[in-house]
Structure formats: structure tokens, C-alpha cells
Length: 317
Ligand code: TXA
Ligand code: MG
Image: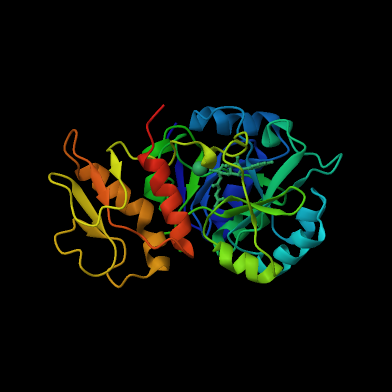
């Protein structure tokens, strides 16, 4: 099987909706990264996601919805969740909330947890696919488990092209790193830094977000130590290029870098370029050659970038 490549016009979106209704896998762009979508109410469809990604079964999936009302039908919102959804949906924010009894999701989506991760994406093509399908769509990032997330349809084809029914080609994802994930314990806790800066959430809430305890059990694969990894070894915080490595620069003063995440030092641009740059250098790296990455300021989207780089650099299990 080779994936159909769908154009996001009316016919392409209708085809995506029909394939999802048939229980098949359709990858589509969101503002963060490409998602690998399946009907979240269909056990067999959701199981196909795990099979295609080669993903450990204990990882729960994010459910994508057309609007906040559809999300309220699936999960119980508290006051803080309402405020965050009001302010940031549609957008790069996933809320982990108690699952409503009888919500109708496949238990595979939540990996048996009593909570569910929900997101209303802010991307015309994602919204078009959700509208054409007409129900909740479970969608992890559309890459083989542990590999770099896809920010273009070509990346999806490279990683999963022979394992999925279709990909809707919506070009490059504007944000480029996955959504920020917030859980409640019971106060809001940052589970994964992502495309929406934690500072913006804290400003909305008027309070600091709790941090996930370092010893807490893994509840998101983005929390696994080694994740988002290219094949080449990654060396973060390399202010100068180590001998023999391919250097991925950031900002000024990176003359000689193989690529630069943002020559002007713009964190938004750097996030959008992160995964594509890692892919490009991975393809260029000779056997054994490492990718060294210039230091990235640890605020705003820099926190998400540094989180992904630390995981890319972690020892592989
Ligand atoms: O931007 C994104 O979030 C992308 C696009 C496609 O929406 N999706 C994405 O999905 O990054 P994935 O599966 O690669 O990561 C989703 C994260 C996982 O770490 C998962 O464990 C966590 O969300 N998650 C989902 N439900 C959860 C729950 N009930 N409790 C804790 N974490 C949960
Ligand atoms: Mg992922």
C-alpha cells in the first residue's frame, strides 16, 4: 500500500473524511506538526495507529476536535481549563482532563487512563479534515515512534508512506513543534513545553504552572528521556562547533554553521525550522558524525526547542 497524497480542496478533504470513516489512517497538517489521524471511537482504527508507528501501547493519544463544545462533550472542564480553552483554542494547546463516562472513545485512545488529552487545532486543513469527518480524531505526530516529528507531507511519506491510507498535503507546519500539554493535579501543571509558550499560559492564569515532578511516572511519550531523535548523535549547547561535527547555528556569530535555525535569533522561526533542520543534517551526516546545536535561550518557544534537543541527545534505549 502506498499512501494517497490528497490536495486540501473540497474533493481531497471529502476523501480524507471518507477514509477516516472507513477506519483507515489519514495524516494531515496542524499548525504544530503533521498528525496521524484515526476515528477516535473505532478500536481497530486506533489500533492501526500504534501498529503504523510501532509505538509502545501505554502511550495515550491526543484527540482533535472541531471546537470547544465538542471537547466539553468528552471531558470535564474545570475553571482553569475553561480559561485556557477560551484564550488559546483553536491553538497549540492540549488539555489533559477527566474523561466523561460514556464519551464513546476507544479505550485505546486513553491507554486505559481516566483522563484524555484534547486539542482544537488552528489550521485550515486540520479543521477541514475534522469537518469532513464529523467526529473526534485521535492523532499522534505522524512519524515512526521515537523519530523526529514531521513538519511536511514529504516527511510523513518518508516515515510512514507504506503504512497509511493517505496524507493531506498542506505544506509546511507554521509552528513546527508539538503542542504545549497542560494537566491538572488539581492545579494546572506543564506536562510538555510546546508551541504555545508557558509564559502566555501563566499570564492568562495569573499564576505559575506546576512542573511535572522528575520522578513522576511517564504519562506522555514526549516525557520519555530519548525521543524526537535523528539517527546522528545530537550535542546541544555547542557555542562553537566541535571538531568534525555538523553545526546547527542559532542567531548571529554562527559563521561556518551547516544550517542556522534563525540567523536573526528569532525563536518562532527557530521552532518552525527545528525538525526540518535536524532531518536535513541527519541526511547529510557521515556515519558517526554528530550534529552539534548552538545554545538556544530557555524562554518562550526556546523551552520547547531545548526540551526536544535534550531528548534528541539522551542515550538511546
Ligand atoms: O502538536 C501536537 O500535540 C501533535 C499534533 C498532531 O496535534 N500531536 C502530538 O501527539 O504531539 P503525540 O502522540 O506525539 O504526543 C501526544 C502527547 C503524548 O506525550 C501523550 O502521552 C500525551 O500527549 N497525552 C495524551 N493523553 C494523555 C493523558 N491522558 N495523560 C497524559 N498525557 C497524555
Ligand atoms: Mg510524537
